[in-house]
Length: 297
Image (cartoon, rainbow, N blue to C red; front, side):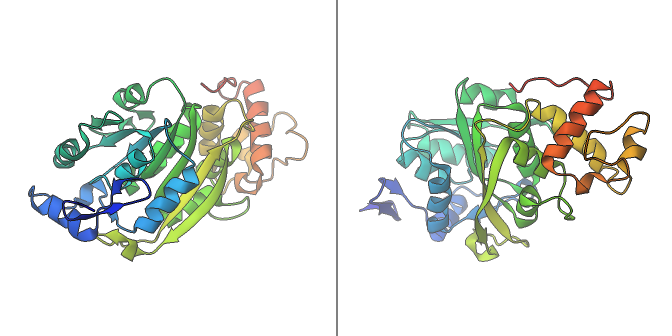
């Protein structure tokens, strides 16, 4: 059975867009991939299914997708019975998505930038997702990846996990360990509130057009009991320390009182474990060096 020129997926009743289909969909509407929006369409169906499998989403689950493009991943999610809220900045692609998926009651399209700022999601996106739990499953535009992930991990506790295709360099930062050059605020945040694992590395030929970088699929599953109750305070504190990563902690935080047990004022931020950074953040807050800890929302 076919859907237009597209083969039908017997597993979920989902039309799978081939590269030829994607090109035809765009060309017929006078559209083309836009570098400014980070549009590199994932065209490997096996990898798309692998990402959705890793997320564990199924019938009735709410999924946020940022940058749906022509809807290849969207259709896979809808085929599994998910309610999908898709945020798309490209007006031409929004029109295409409405034509293809607008009648599906499980599909909601939010047109515009998913970010209100580097530190806040657009209210329309969170409003469309609703007040309950959800997961992010997306082939994230490279420019939006780090702020979107940081906001969801730090500020939106009802987001149960991030299952995303991102630049390999960003994936390596998420998974990095203390003492490595990649260890920094996003690693501290992700590992404090979630468990991070690599799903797959993706060569450039998995995308159209081919990006100039290698990509990766990463799963960040939120912990039932996070290591901190103040994820935003922790990542802001870590950002402050890592902006001066070559300086000793005593030079950044002062040496006027004893540091927490096991932490030397001569140490540098990159040498501390996530647990030690959490303890240091609490110590600093108690000393009035920064805002008090606050519970995640």
